[in-house]
Image 1 (tube, rainbow, N blue to C red):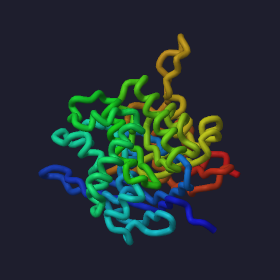
Image 2: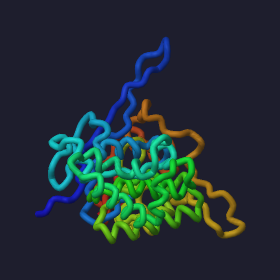
Image 3: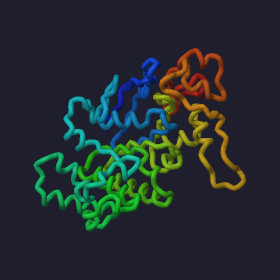
Image 4: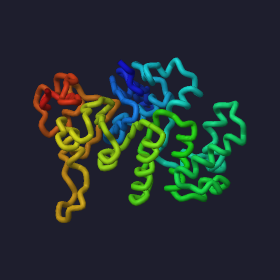
Length: 319
């Protein structure tokens, strides 16, 4: 059986956080036993509130931080067996804020060329040729390569970030909130560009976002994170039309609708945000769950099959 392009095996990440001058050091659970698979050519969306562990998971997959436990495999090979150059040829990121992810003192041409120059052994003429071709492909005039990031609009800067990510022709692109810092009209342009590039270059995307409308538009499969755990995963169409976990239902209920007269949606989750330094007993969602029963505060739910996906809830329908 062919190995998936990306496999995350029971990955965990814990950090130590200072509690202040007179308080004890606390342990923050950022990611807790996460397992995922992404087949070649697929788009896996990862959604959840701020602080649920999405960006930490992205950094682990990119090899930027080493997990406390578990492993990440590309084509069946552990990231720990690869050096930085090999990882860069396989995986590249597109981050949330294109301004902060681009060196403000470097010309656009040098920014896009960086992955090529870091590999070593590529002639300068070939680098320039590939950089100009990629700038054109993402919708930018190669003459813009002489400019600085501050001289470009937000949408143009994100196109530069995409060009930098693709200039090595990686197999997997990790998109961490790639459109959240952009105007709505520009968001649509960037999403359409990412879709075109995926088909053209045979890419696979791990698409991390808190914007469910965006994820529904781009993803073939969706994983929902809460306090470091994957609480539901399913094909995108099934998850959006028939969610099984109460948290997934609350997230979908929170999506604003253009229909007049409906006002601001009520999620039923309250104002308290989850604290990764103080994970509740039992089901970690139970303090905010509108349908929780006594068992939920006592027993941790197991991960069960739910149609083509999985769900982690005592009360969710499975099978």
